[in-house]
Image 1 (cartoon, rainbow, N blue to C red):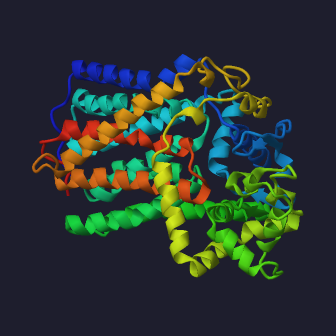
Image 2 (tube, one colour; image 1 turned 180 degrees about the horizontal axis):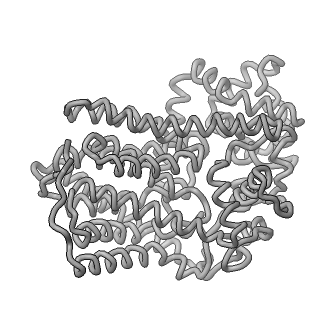
Length: 497
């Protein structure tokens, strides 16, 4: 246990409050500029799923309206067309849906924004506290607020304002990196807070579980290279978060079976991605028709049209038109079969075409790393229509705010943010290679965060499809970490193992 320093005076606390106020002002800047929260097509789906769960838990209310669930092309479709009878859509997080439903029931849907801001503040504060081991709140608050303000020049405030779980992905990355480097010297309340934040994040979206899985070997390698005693404890802490993620998935399946008498089905994103990239389509051409391969039903559906856009992953999963639709035009039992077969289908395709499949995932990951504009956080008319029935917002109906993409500001903003991210990456690289600037633990911390950004690109670009929303949700970690590491450069690492 590291002894506490001298008791800080009232002036120190006042300075800390001012720094915190500045950080919060930066994070809430987009909410203030827009005048309303930002939302996406799936916001309505989370609210409706959460309200349904609350009804099943005994908090009865009038039945929520069925949300609209769209394809990536923005065409809305009724949720009833997506959820096959006797199944529960496992593509959305039941935990995040409960938060959304609870806040909506309380008339405080914007509580999701407060949740976003609190998760970021706590994560950065905890990292600063552990690395500095400084009890002076003014100094700790400055080291927390300035990096957050740097991140606010990037995409961070857009995702704070976003009524979606995306911001919890970088929150998870920060806390897994902290546990993976400093976990052995963290005090138990600090470990508990980091585990709680990472656990909340990992259960908020299925992609976060995949990102954490990819980060675990990086933590193992970092611990082994650092070479301190009981290095294995660090990956154990990260693995504990993975256990929470897997447990949530098991609990969802058990609850769906016991309460709703349904199976949990995840949309066939991997299958669609493999088909668009080529290896999956080649596999189907070689093996279909075959009644022993459930995905061959999808191959037959794809052959009903000559439109080449039919093979786009988002169209495969979401579209319902005769020209572009396939999966959702199948009979319900075949939709379930294709969805349940996607992991087996992936392994079979990988076995037959390992090089092509690996290259496709690598290309998608590289494409994803270059997509970081905030355009997908700005609502459109079709997204407003999809969320027309959402209730419980302080601001009233979810409608468009003052930030309109048509005003031409996204292009210049994206260019400015690209320069910010490039400079941040260069600063991080220089700090890590210049001798004596950062301690080994600080370098490991930055490297694991960078690994998390790449893991996000692999998961989102490789399994779903490259999209600006997926890159923008984590890219603000670059200016945050570059600023924090620059402030820490040359300092002794008092939290080092």
